[in-house]
Image (cartoon, rainbow, N blue to C red; front, side, top):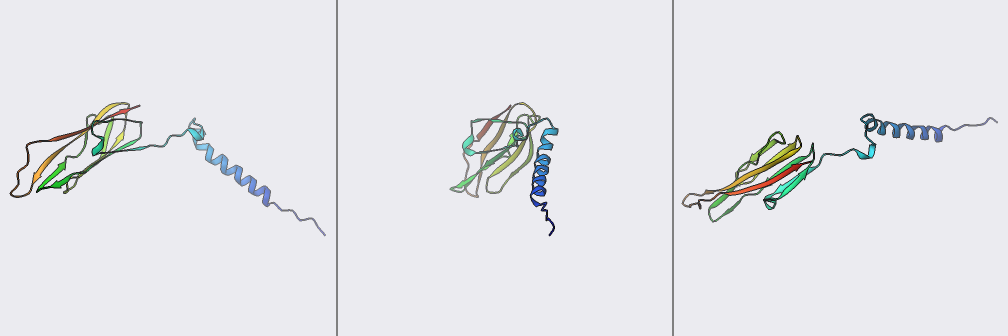
Length: 144
């Protein structure tokens, strides 16, 4: 009888080594260790974040979600959030909704500091009057 050889264990081991080398190669080609690559983050800000300061990094997205409200025939609506410095925080999306909500997304482009602002104002129903007031919303974003 002849001897039978099985290549399965060696073939599997070689495949694992090949896969491991292939996944480490892209990071090593860019001069980075595979475990040190940083993924972009998303910072989400809401009504409650008014007056805060936050830190972000290059490539991050900062999302603002402001909620309007309706009471006693008055709708309190937000303006579309805006950046004080579009070279630091570039707005990539922004909208307002009929119910008073507003949202925007900003991409962190450069080091520095920028503020994101919006204003809430009143829209009255027929037969109602709004108080003469505007409520500001502001968050400072420091990019490091």
